Length: 271
Image (cartoon, rainbow, N blue to C red; front, side):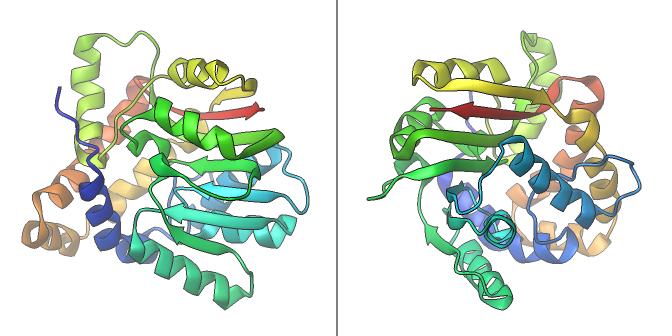
């Protein structure tokens, strides 16, 4: 089976696209969370970050590792709202640069580092391992959890939101609904139970599991509107096949949500 989540492709993807993400979608590089359905995309994106923080019961002054930090918006929010000491890591140098500028602009001391999440290495430990929509990019999720948990303080929490496929998906459903997502979005999707099994094998207790697909599916209605912009397709044709596949996979994301084969899930666990 072909793996689409090759690291170099992911680096190139985010180095190239992050400025476009920022201008078209906003500072938060993830889905929105709609409660009333009337929220703007920016309000919904912030609501997702808030929901994860509240569900994980983040404490004031926590030391947080934001894994796959994107353009730094979660780290900055946690630093401002919880006086958290935040460190963000990403494999994209462009994202680190953008995150540092954003943090300086609002006057928070969040730190951002270019680091491969599957090779995490720190001298200190953290109260929270935080990750939104990043782990699905990783090639060896068991290795990632095994390594990252070593840097979680006793009693510390894992707070994550990620992309999943439904439990017991058939080969036909996987090929129709999941493979186009994996190809375009440079991910490899597992089920929520796969993550749970790995966490429990690391002696991490699951506190909360939630499928929040219903609150986040609107993301792709808005995204499909955004990519009606012909300039994006012209840019894709000029740049790379991967960018073209990325834009084409927006419809696959909507279909994945609509069919229930794609799952947008939240997991809170504790060491």
